[in-house]
Image 1 (cartoon, rainbow, N blue to C red):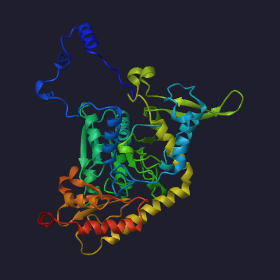
Image 2 (cartoon, one colour; image 1 turned 90 degrees about the horizontal axis):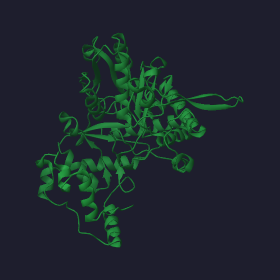
Image 3 (cartoon, rainbow, N blue to C red; image 1 turned 90 degrees about the vertical axis):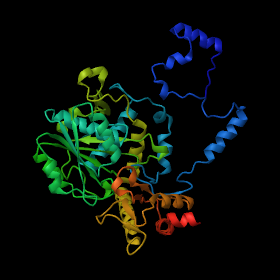
Image 4 (cartoon, one colour; image 1 turned 45 degrees about the vertical axis):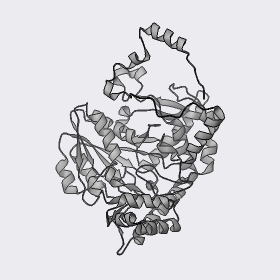
Length: 456
C-alpha cells in the first residue's frame, strides 16, 4: 500500500491553484444536511506494528464458508472449485494480461475466448456467445436491451416475479429513463400461471424474461410461456443456471432467443459477492445486436489454425452512436476460470454434479415431511434451492440461532417479498453432506422461539 502525504503548504498551494479558500469549499455542491458534521469515527493514529495487529484482529472477526456450513444461495453459491482452476488461472500469461480491445490480440487469449464461447453455446443451444459480461444481473439487462433494439417499436418488457429480485431491480434502474414499461407477472405458489401470463402479453411487449430454475429454485416447463411470447412477437430471454444444464433441457430447446446467467457456480469462489461473470448467448439472427466480443477460428496465411476477434459490435470508439453497449471491459479472467472448470467436468461431470444437487435438494424436502416447525412452502419440484416456511414466524431468530451453531442457514425472503416474511430460501450444493442437511433440519426446528429466548 502506498501513502502520499500532502503537507499543509502543499494543500494551500493546490487550493490556490484551483481558486478555493479551503477544503470545505470543495464540498459546497453537496447540501449541508448530507455532509458529516463531525470527525470520522476511527481510532487515533497508530504505529505500523500496532496497526497491523489491529487489522488482523478485525479480519479475525470474519467468518466464511471455511468456518461455517453454508446454505446461502440467491445467486452466489458455495460450490466446489478444483485446485487446478486456481493453478491455471493464476499463471502470469493469463493473470496479468489486459482486457483485449484489438483484433490482433494474442492467440492464447483468443483461444480461451473461443473455447469459452463454444462451451456456452453447447450448453445453451444458442448459435453464438460473447466473452463476456460483468455478472448475471447486467447480462440480463443487456439481453433486454437487445430485445428492445430488435423490437424497437414496442415499449414494454414482461418479467415474472419469480425472476431474481435484484435482476428486476437492475432492469427497473436501466429502463426508467428509456420510456419503457417494466411489467411484472405475479406467480401462484412460486410458479407462473399460463393464463395469467398470456393476459399480460400484448403487441407492446418487446421481450419477456423467463428463468429456469426460478429464484425459488422451482423447475418449470418454460416452453408454453416462450411459445405464447413468440406468438405475440416478443423476443424470449432466458435466465438460466449453467450447472443445472447438466440435467435440464437447454433453453434453446424450449424456445429461448437469448440466454443469460451468472457464471459464479462455474469455478468462481464466493469472494465477498464479486466480481462475478455474466454469461450471454443468442441466436445468429441477433448477433449484430450482441454486446461484447466474439472470437472466431480461421486459418492464417500458412494454413495453420488460428483465432481472431471477429466481432466487437459494442465498441464506442469504433461505432460511436451505433455501439450496442457502453461496457468498457469484460470479465476475461473469470471466463477463463469457467472454461477450465467446464473442461475439467465435461458433460459427464456436469451431469453428475447437477444430479448430486438434485438428490440432496430432494433429501432436504423429505427430511421436512410431517408435522414440524419448518415446512416446505412450495410443492413443485426444486433444484438446489427450496423455500421453507417457519410455522412460528420467527425467521430472524432462527437464523441467529443457526449462526451460533455454525450454520449459515439461508436467506430470509422478507427482504424482497413481504408476503413471504415467514420464509427462508435454502440452497443445497454438492458440497453439503447428509450430515450437514440433518444438522440444518435439527437446528432450525430446535431454535428457541421469541418468548422462549426472552424467558431464557
